[in-house]
Image (tube, rainbow, N blue to C red):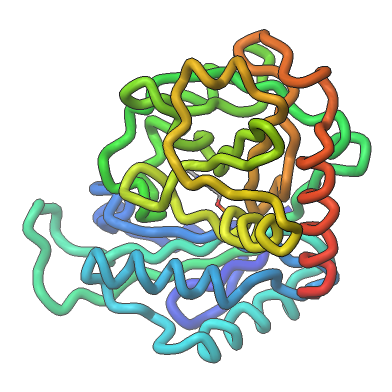
Length: 283
Ligand code: PLP
């Protein structure tokens, strides 16, 4: 079943082949992307996703196809109006555009903007309680992970390794410290405080990460934004990951070692409850 597809100002579906082989997103990974969730056809945290997309485009000197959040919102509204299901995700990618292959790009290129909606099976209550297993893997990504660029090869290799080990996520390690998950932000809970990597070039500024930090502060849970040492991973009371598709997801095992009692911890459960409520309110 093809999905509804927006491409450079028009709508079609994903059965149409819309990109040329010299699109720089394809040849150079010269593109950024976003993924937002929609529930009951209402986009969740659209403004935050637009802001991050805009920052990435600005950093890469790619013109933003949507001059403001209202223009972006209008395109996404039409995409969802044309979509046949109520809940899912929208994938958006903006590349520098198409030009004869050369590392130097010509000035004044027109970006390629695509967006499509897709069904997504969000975790149910049982999964949210059960949590996930993760493995650790070396962080082999470049040093600009704060950009949501489409260069996801190192992330994909780490995720595949996790899958082959019977785990759901790979937690990436650089210089004996934890950066983040291959497709999620990572949080540890030690003595009732949450610890997560500070915002810098080693991690993506996760939309859910930001909300969870605010929710923790509102709940009088202390937040330490500092790199977690790899050795600390095995002394944790609780751990969880966050992402647009997984929300707040408990981690119950790291490299085969049990975290807490192999059950969702109390701090994790509280933040999960608060985040789900926030998300429902955003509908
Ligand atoms: N970190 C990485 C590397 C990711 O790919 C993602 C999501 O795809 C996240 C963190 C979580 O970001 P968000 O909460 O905005 O979905």
